[in-house]
Image (cartoon, rainbow over all chains, first blue to last red; front, side, top):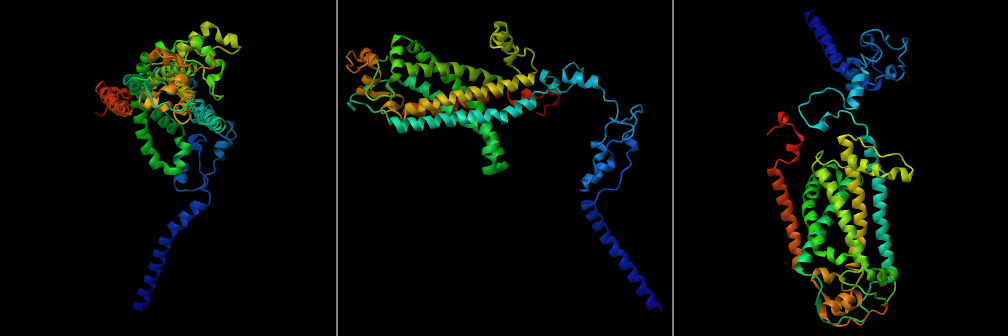
Length: 408
Length: 41
């Protein structure tokens, strides 16, 4: 009798334990597949409750129609005359308007002007432009220039020294000139690559190499981009000082341009001084674009310290340019964040133009023309190269006639 | 070509010098972006 009683008690206990073990599992399965039980939202005036939050955390499907179908009517939500109405409390539009337009009286631990901009609505437009047209048009421009250069090479081939190598060398650039050139050019190449990888990293590197690699790279790339900017700017000033006097336009440049510099026709070598018209165009492009990219880069290096666009826009408006073009005047009041966004966009557009020009310069200075790289690499060029491409300069330096400018 | 390589070395040296100098001037991101009351250093 006693044994039977004990056996019954143990069986009951086992069944009870088993049910207790299974019930949480069942409950969890129910949560993951079924709808959470109907929730009383009267306490929140029809808004979200703690139960909603907990149900989501338990992976339960929460019926969100209480929000999506809440049109503010008394039939759906709480009456708006209550303290907790349909909107979940006073909406306080004056406060949000004041936050958006920077007139709210706020105190923050970071006492910088830009930190008071709690809401700025240009961010999404900037992000969309950066992720869309900036990448698409910029990338297309670089690919287009590369394709043109390949086509030019296939059609024209390498521009050779027509009279062959003489074996006699003449000093083309002094060490001080070459140092300035390579200081700027070396920094520029690295800045261009790191800049491109910052812009295209999310779409080009992360799918290939993963987030962890890109996170590490982005940190290093940003450091390089920020700090290589200084040798670039020093090199820019350096070469400007060295070469500005040689790059003043003159009548010979017109002759050079009239025949396309002889680049498209074999045997045509228009006269040129130390720099021909093509090189002068490159020089002035580098100076102007380099200055612009440096100033916008400094604006980004020292955020909110060097804001350029509102004042520039005001100047452009005062000149009447928008009126001439038939467009609205440019905004003269910009938030601190908008200034940074415009600086980033401008910096990148200028960089793309700069890189496209640099690609053409690198091509003609290396594979595109025999003897060209030696000028900047070794500092010396073959005399026949000098006679064909810079005949006036050759005569000035050597005192000998170049006798090789058939188009003169 | 020596001049070219020398310029490349100068790029690296100038970059580290710029980083060091700006750091000494308090122009690091941490120093520039945080107010004194929330700075951890």
